[in-house]
Length: 251
Image (cartoon, helix red, strand yellow):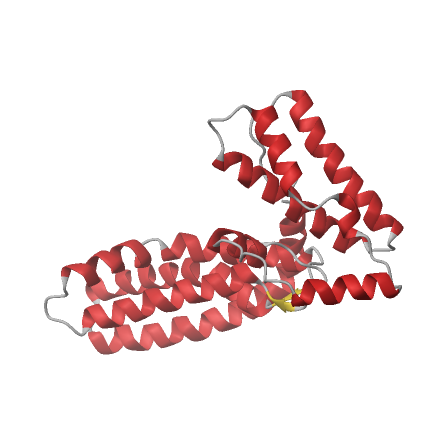
């Protein structure tokens, strides 16, 4: 199923499954590809359970009957190519536009894996926006002697959670790209996965050096550490990159 389903009686759940099965059989007869069939059926299933969730206080059997009656029948998903189908298509185009999806449905559709579309991995894009926002808020806070309360609160919420959130999203993007989702952005996803762990390790090392050294030596040590990180990262990727990717695939 496309999402976690609520606790429903078996007969109610069976009615929903039967409706979805009939839609899929119609799509199969229309030579619709498996990927597109799955996308259509998942969208209808999501719509049904969201409408059920909005009517949580009603009897499930009655609610499902009314919901299914209000949806397009399975035959509406047939893909004929004759004159009747052309006329139907034209009448649908001239009809009033359907009610737009909610923002939550749009977000779920954007986030979901879509093998038919070549695009930048959504987790990688979200992680980049998160990290960029955290850096921007940090720079804004440093420009004030006494940061405003709102800016400080935003920095606390976005900046302090960025190391964990960006790293997790980067790892998720690597896994989705590796699993043949037709998504791009592997270099960006890898950078997001390892950026904060390496950054904190470097800051900790520089902090240890700063305890007993002068500022010039600390700067020199920082440059040496940066160069060492680049060389070490290239060596580690050549040596352990395949093992890391296999581990990602196994999660």
